[in-house]
Image (cartoon, rainbow, N blue to C red; front, side):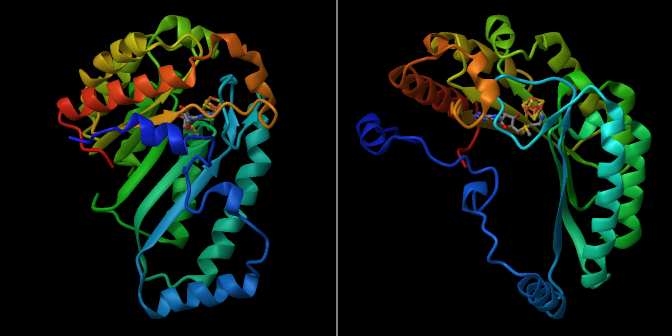
Length: 286
Ligand SMILES: C[S@@+](CC[C@H](N)C(=O)[O-])C[C@H]1O[C@@H](n2cnc3c(N)ncnc32)[C@H](O)[C@@H]1O
Ligand code: SF4
């Protein structure tokens, strides 16, 4: 059992980078030249290193008020067309540097919302990747895609599985209707449950669920209730994010009144309670 030390957390607490990438996006800089990239890729070729591919699809059809992701909100599906064309060019340019023998053992599509794209566009992109990279066709790779449950049905999940994706990451965030409304992300528990059932029917190897603690109107009790419902669906992984509220940087977060946010003390209580519940349910802390 992990022991949480509230005094230590208080002592070193404070806002920091959200490690969705390593290094965190705030540490990216422009001092890496094309030559550096080419040399590094060439060294990987000589060492026959395995590959991991990441594809970013930045579009979302509607905005969640907490969102700090790199995304473009638009109802206009046409916006994806020039982006896909650029992405295809980039796939070709990158692939030209890489030894075709190197297997892609991991692939991740993130966003935004990758399923903003139509079935035909998703298929086209997978085809393009398979044309230029050595994708594994025997289901041994870890091929994952981020899913906004509002954008998929059974047929879509079947298509994704057929195209070779075998891991899903579902954006759950919170299951409390009041919280969902406050962040403009209404997705009833029944919708989440259906997404899980459909994914299980297609034998996805692993399902991750994103949750956030520290959202408006959340309390230790409400979060525990959401977590209970989520644990019942047995996701293989749960990513429990600490809500990063930076309204000066992410303007959309100004839609969330400060008075509705839980205090740092409450957030700490949520973390401790959630950590305990997850470990009791058999989850291992990473
Ligand atoms: C790119 S999104 C996931 C895919 C998809 N767009 C969705 O929302 O379902 C990555 C995850 O980052 C988390 N996230 C976004 N903004 C955040 C913030 N301000 N603080 C903490 N976590 C955040 C959410 O849990 C979200 O699911
Ligand atoms: S949380 Fe996901 S769906 Fe919501 S705005 Fe951000 S990227 Fe888009």
